[in-house]
Image (cartoon, rainbow, N blue to C red; front, side, top):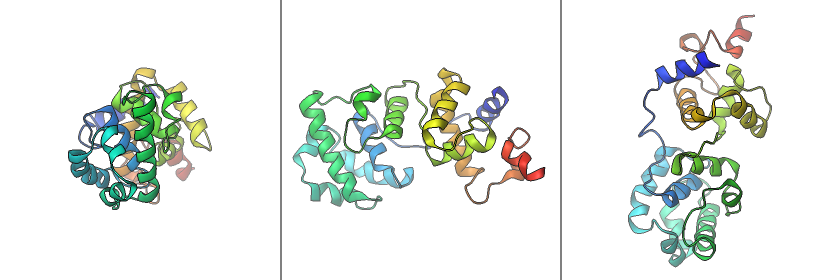
Amino acid sequence: MKEVLDILDRLYPDTSNQFLNFTTPFEALIATMLSAQTTDIRVNSVTSELFKVANRPEDFCKMDIKEIEDWIKTVGIYKNKAKNIKKTSEILVKDYNSQVPNKKNELIKLPGVGNKTANVVLANAFDIPAFPVDTHVFRLSNRIGMADANNVEKTEKDLERNVPREKWNITHKKLILHGRKVCKARKPLCQTCDLNKLCLYYRSLND
């Protein structure tokens, strides 16, 4: 496990500017909500303009659903996301003094915020150790052998157990980058992968 983490550190020394752009916890929450079934590049394109006109819960409370839809219509499932952004903003204003909570059990109460979204916000907006498991993290961790699970929940528990807590936030990003660039879903670049000697999936191909 340590060898895998060391290699990832060497391959991806800088993870900045490769994920969602935000300046506040609320912006991080909205960007993460928008990112479901959409690329970070697409979300950043939308939020670069959206956050100029609305980057506080109060701003979205004043907007009607159609206006929010118009701003985010280039992202996937935008109608549902618009409703959730509106409802979440209203709840934050009413119950949280317009502040994004920094506890998972509070975050997952918000409309459109599931376990993964809550973990992303905790890790990225508050620097609280969390291990978000998206499709890349799920695929890579189980291929390599960092986890041995058939669902996201068990994978998250395996990773939390196997990776030092202080490395959770950064390791999830490095796994995503490796998934985007090398360990792809359909045609992983196993032959040129720096992790192949440690990877259980690669070993199985050669057994």
